[in-house]
Amino acid sequence: MPTTAYTERRYGGVTVLVGADLGAYPHANSVLVRGTAETLVIDPSLSLVGTAPPADMVLVSHAHEDHVAGLADYDVPVRVHQKDLAALRSRDVMVEGYGLPPDATERTHAVLRDHFHVRDCPDATAFEDGTVFDLGKRTVTVVHLPGHTPGHSGFLIEPDGFLFVADIDLTSFGPYYGDISSSLTDFEASLRRSREIGVRWYGTAHQKGVIEGAAEFARRLDAFEGVVEKRDATLLAFLDEPRTVEEITEHRLVYRPHVEGPHVKPVERRTATQHLHRLIDTGRVTEVEEGRFRAT
Image (cartoon, rainbow, N blue to C red; front, top):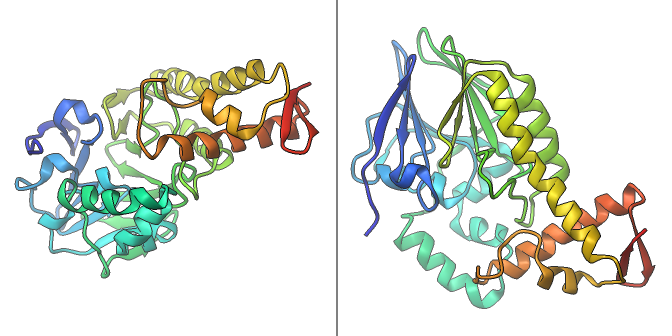
């Protein structure tokens, strides 16, 4: 049975609802923002199921199961970026976006339905980059940070100086851009954008919690972004002789050898392809014959 307990931590007028295991997947950290007129929740997680605090609106940073598990506890307007709206409205679309093998689809639906309580959310509506939600003496502004998903967004909460960066989560795993519609190029642009927003607090969705100060956030962002560089280095070392995409997939850039599951090969293949394209564009890898690549 999922844990439904969370811990409240206050940052000015912002309350972070820290999920079980410090928000490690399958849990996540949620955010409660109260104004003088309205209250909203960002990313109701698995830890809120059955214990969700009241709110007038729910904002979703992106349409992944760990960020919407608590939605069933709310009968209020739900908003997400336009580019993730279809996946939030339909679990079929959400599952399709993971790009899993056909034989894993039914099981994935069951996990999302039974463990994460994911249901179709047909009444959800869209927001855009820069949309401002005025709660009364407190505002929440959408900061579009795509790459993880096309609609992945952060939220700037003022006057508190709190930026929720969702799955720019600063974990040692590094950036994830392995879904069908993920983009490494967009993710790197989002890292640059988040770095340029100077606030007092930066809230993450998983494990690392809240980081205080722009300098400390930048330091941790360097390490997070450095995982992408390590994947490049791993790939270049492996391409000391001609290799195919399937060989790179088996070698792995993302997951450790002991990790298993239907998601592993598709994610590794999509990640490898994105890194190959980058390295070819910068002249560090060449296609020596059709479908075989080598470091220059």
